[in-house]
Image 1 (cartoon, helix red, strand yellow):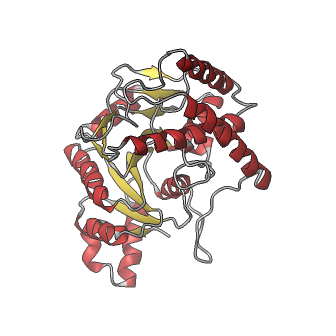
Image 2 (cartoon, rainbow, N blue to C red):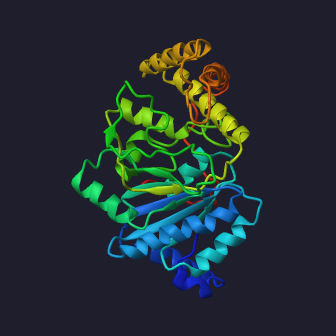
Image 3 (tube, rainbow, N blue to C red):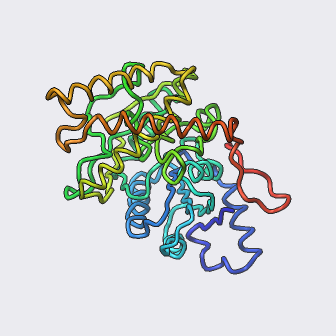
Length: 347
């Protein structure tokens, strides 16, 4: 259940009538242009900086109405207390929600259900948005196609972190079958009109951090959009800075394997609807074989090999097959609701 805390009403939150009034005032307020959705689990140290960066960007362009939705996905490190403190001091509309079911996809689905904005903006809890992010966002959706999934640039937040899970291209592009969708638009900086989200549906909760397939809930969403004829676009602005904190090679290699595990499940899931994903698996096998004879590695700078991609793709496909047999038609995600409470909808 979401707990809604507009900053100006914090001192009245103890009274039940006041809480009802607060919730009503949120629902009756003008529809925001953008809803920033931040899903978090046990990252209390980075969460405050992420939220403050969003607040700064929104204050810098105050004429563009926006809100913040934060979903706590079962944190045990003091995150609920930190969120309560942040909600009491923020000057922008904020909704706090909890999602006890493990997994980033489940948390994203809860965030979508709570958001009121026309544009949904997914930002990770270890990312900080650029001061001009909101202005860039409004410009793209005013001048470009609204029926699109659009992601922006992801820079390294701390130069001491290894250069991974970033995208620094300064060239705008749209996804085609010749490009693997993994990493084309990063889930830590992904936006869409709420009507697009309604067309695609919820995130597949078998994918993503905390779920059996550990990654690729964002990539699965891109593939599903592409299959519906919804363009997937990368733009070189709308910048976020990723403070992922990984400075040891072992941590990067583990993440590399997790991404490959998720992508293997993705390939099997979309075997009939997007068979072109198999082409990319074939290219990876060819590149892995080429490494044996001195060919380039997947990431020469970090010395990451193609072989873990091949092996974990196979493991991921096998794991997805088992999941599909035990739950061939995953239900629409549901939240724990009080009796008589309506299910949240995309407005």
